[in-house]
Image (cartoon, each protein chain N blue to C red):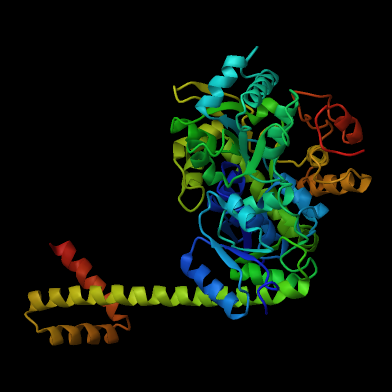
Amino acid sequence: MSAEQSPKIVIVDESPIRAAILEEGLREAGFTQVVHIREMQSLLARIYAVDPEIILIDLENPSRDVLEAMFQVSRAVKRPIAMFVDQSDSASIQASVEAGVSAYIVDGLKKERIKPILDLCVSRFNAFAKLQEELERTKSQLEDRKIIEKAKGILMKVKGLTEDEAYVLLRSTAMREKKKIGEIAQSIITASEMLK
Amino acid sequence: MTAPLRIGFIPLVDAAALIVAVDKGFAAAEGLEVELVREVSWSNVRDKLNIGLFDAAHLLAPVAIASSLGLGHVKVPIAAPFNLGVNGNAITVSPTLHAALMEEIDGDRFDPLATAKALAKVVTKRRKAGADPLTFGMTFPFSTHNYQLRFWMAAAGVDPDEDVRLVVLPPPFMVDSLRNGHVDAFCVGAPWNSIAVDLGIGHILHFSSDILARAAEKVLALRQVWADKHPDVVAALVRAAVKAAAFIEEPANLTEAAQILAQPERIGVDVEVIRRTLVGRLKISPDGTFRESGRYLLVGREGAGRPDPVQAAWLYAQMVRWGQTALTPDGVKTAMAVFRPDLYDAAVGRRPPDEAPAGLGAFAGPVFDPGNILGHLKAFDVGRWKA
């Protein structure tokens, strides 16, 4: 796809990571003119300046209502011919809303051209959601590790155990009680704080 | 009774009946399991309702009408069997604009015609001085806030599309925008006006009830096809909302209701601000001046919960007046059919009341007649409609 064929796309997203993932995907797919707007204060001014043909915005952005207004009351911008893909294409609308992205077509772009863009955004948004989940999981694992370290320390001090022995005790207790080691460690910390 | 209902709402005091219906157990008592989902924009609420991710929603009354007419977005017919609030907005202006208006005002400062005339003078002065036009924030193109601001200023000949700038701002951004001079004034629901006053950066110029004595504000919105398919659920939902509204309006319950609404996962603001809103006693100036009105926000009293199709027709007339749609007989009919007093009556098990609802009580223009929208439009000098 040559540069002049590639539509101008604006991504409105307060999450820099998600915007980067989206931008990269769009570039890989051959869309060379992609601009990320993060600053919400001057949103309209920036959009006017870029004059995009497509605007992609994350659904959790309260500024979506601002965009709607731009399309409905402002005479400074070309009116959109369609939002999402098409009024009749409810499956695409649903997929994009569920994934958390909304697309506005600002110029006379053909439906066939927005569809692959939207599909790509939906899969990228879903990928981001998965990434976010993994990040959360890793974070809680890290958190667990900190708690386990602390609990081991308490056991070593109170019961005079070595570090290995303390860990074995934690693990065997967790297995016996069918709980996570983190949970057992947390209860040791809680108990020791209460007994202070 | 059925699968859990997912209902979307925006954290505003006029979601009160919905929140209390769920959190106080009125919905459960009707056999309903409800999950309330907090949303960030009216576009989101509308879209999630329209595609069926929500079964029902707290929605701006004009958005329900626009959705049924297919204005601005996908056309999805909406049924509104319960009116979540009448009135509840206010116009807040910056201290600078307030001083300028008070300098020009000839008459009572709570008289919207007097303040609108003062605004016209300020607008003219600014133009002569080469200053930027004043900027007013409101919440959505299809919103009572938009129409109330326009109705007010146009009554004194100020053209909202030529003489000032009207911009949409998400309610949580209003206060900041006033502080940093992005807007000179805004019209929004509670609690944002009070928050601006408490911070010392705004004066409440008008309660929206100064402009219209009764204006339908938010509705409980359902997809028409969904409502047709689940009449029993609709009736149960309306009954739960009616009971919640009655609970909120009972003075003895005021503190409890305000506490329920103030929870972080609901509206998430100070209990005291919500109390003030429900009572209609608001601090209007940073110097501590209070103003009280029994009409500030009607949640259930004075028949506020029963949808009034005349209100829907008025909102449609405003869409026509400001060029959002053309006037057609079908348009009027479709708009009025969104408000469903019949579903309300069926749910609470009573016959339609004999007396007509109280009317809109607009401060300017003739009494509104839904049968003569053209006459309504012709009564005003300023407007964008085409005959």
